[in-house]
Length: 192
Image 1 (spheres, rainbow, N blue to C red):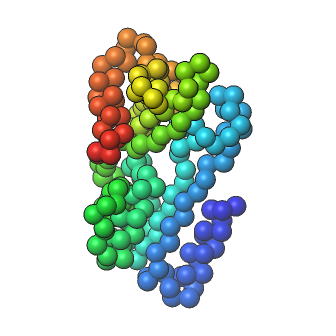
Image 2 (cartoon, rainbow, N blue to C red):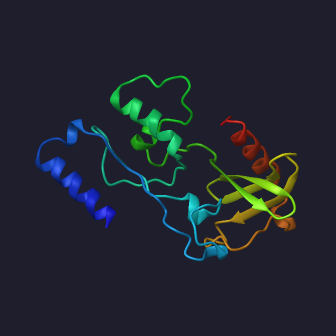
């Protein structure tokens, strides 16, 4: 329904000659988990809860192209600054997606980042720091008070697109863990 409304908006901009001086960004919510992993809410680090649609239409950019480049909502502000010809304030996090709009096949950021805090009986608050690469979702759960590592989740989305199996303890994935651990640590500290 919302995609249809976005199409109507873009058609109206075309019909009224406004498309070439209007930037349109359509983000979205992902909805509820509908029982995935026993959850009935939006709050988690699971793929179903962190992946959302994003559409950007901007003057001078080719339309109807898609990309597999990873993006985060923190990328929207610098993207809008670039598209509007404004300087991005230095305190902004994220990267402008304008280069991806010009070349959707472009290699982009190595990971997208999310965090979610949950309670774990007997141990208190656990902070889940998760990264999504082109192939994996890697999550570290740490005790909020002590920063002690409690659990690691690794989902191979290439082999398990439904994200149902944690393979972090399987020997064949051991070679991927150091790089994913480093990306996760850098993301958590704000470094990309």
